[in-house]
Amino acid sequence: MSEESLHEILGDIEQSVRDFTGAEAVLAEAEQRRDRTRQAVLEQVGRLYAELDAIHAPELIGVLRHLYWQQPGIHGRPLAEAAGLHLHDMLAAIGPAPSGILCAHCGTELLRTSRSWKPPARYGPPLCPHCLSLERDTRSRRWQVERLRSRIVAEARVQARAMDWRAAAELVLAFPPLSQKVSRGSSTDQQEGVWRGWENARVVRNRLIASAATSDDSVGVAVDEAQLLVETALRVADWDTARTRDIVAPITREPALALLTRLNREVRATAQAARERAEAAYPEDYEPTEGEENEAWHSTDR
Image 1 (cartoon, helix red, strand yellow):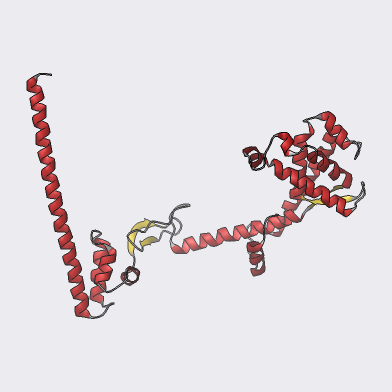
Image 2 (tube, rainbow, N blue to C red):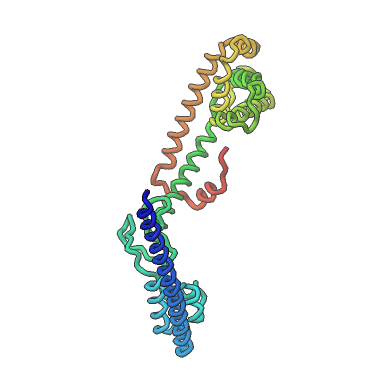
């Protein structure tokens, strides 16, 4: 680079810095002027309030409405205070303003209730208050119907011989999660529910023991418990076929895989039949009674 070119570039930088410094001075003066004039506006609003001696005088409300919605540089809280109001009370007095946004359902224009207002479109298209209320009611009704359906399914019982349930439970309990190198709360446990499946098997087995049912007695197990028991047993059945055979043989002569496959069919058939009964009892357009609504809100999943 020649000395002449370097001198020219440095000169241009110096001029640019002077221009920038001048612009900053102009901006500072403009900001000071804006602050003074904004304060003057607030003082005039205070004068108007003092003259009218009435917080909700039409003239005062008209001025406040114009300044709040059309002059965003005049802050809302000082404006309200100049008129002897709290911000919330001022917003209630001046009312909302058109937003230019239409309701996605009925086409009604949405109204801005404050400067910080945003269209209610967090979970979907913007809706007016009426349509939003209807949509919430619809979602709530559908949720309640689904809860009522779930109760029917949860109350369904898978019927099978006590020895079949006992064989499945003992098979799961013979392979505790720690022997599978799965610790409680680990990612594998959370993803596959290893401990949950093992503890479910223990609950089922203890219940069978307490019932004193004989091997050929028909015993009903809740759909969710039965499904988890069979799924867990199917997972562990082929880890050690010899050990699986030794565990099941004292309980039943039927091969473990054949027994579990049959139980799995029973679980699926029972669950499907229960879902069909639930959908027939509570169709999509069903309107829950007040008692059913309370039951849905206070019930918990099994």
